[in-house]
Length: 71
Ligand SMILES: [Zn+2]
Image (tube, rainbow, N blue to C red):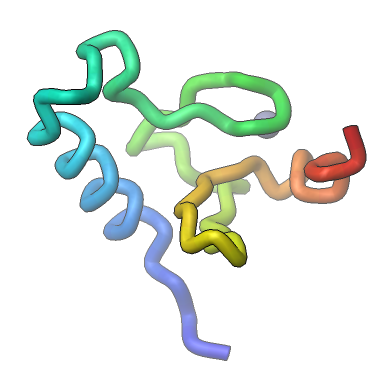
């Protein structure tokens, strides 16, 4: 499995969000979908990148992955 550069992908996604004027400023951030905590570029240890079947890019805490989708 190829190593995924989470930080690079995170920056790319954040840049896309901030360049998209249809996205409200308060939504131009990336949160963990399980615990809802905002993820920061300089705190990406323990954060994983997941691409869903619907091609949605998600950044999620490693510890939250196990809880994801079980709600
Ligand atoms: Zn989380």
